Length: 171
Image: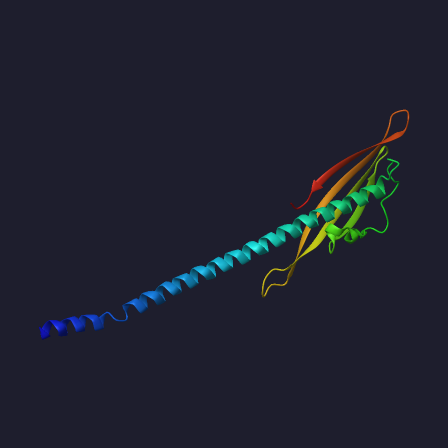
């Protein structure tokens, strides 16, 4: 009987630390999974912040393009005889609550033929996306919109007909 008792006690003492090893292994695996989840969440938040800034930059560029278009074809509907000055111009779109902190740079160029005057308005919107994580420098989203205006003198009446074309330069 003593032999069995000695054999049993030898087996139990050999298995005493196995549960502790299993618990440590499971804790390490869970810590790695938690770290991976935290990294994925941080990347998702950074992407979302940049997408929002990019959308705001598009609307800043669009607002600048509309400002430039209005400078060429004012409320009268007739095209101006030349581009606005100074070019590039910086309209105050930052005063729009949804575009606070954003800016637009609007440039105009023109070309004239005998019966047609063509204008090209290029508007670049910029909005800050903030600091996208530790160790990263602040990021600014940029978007550009190009508007082409052709003013043609037509027929016997000599009336101007204005045609607008929009292009999104970098979607």
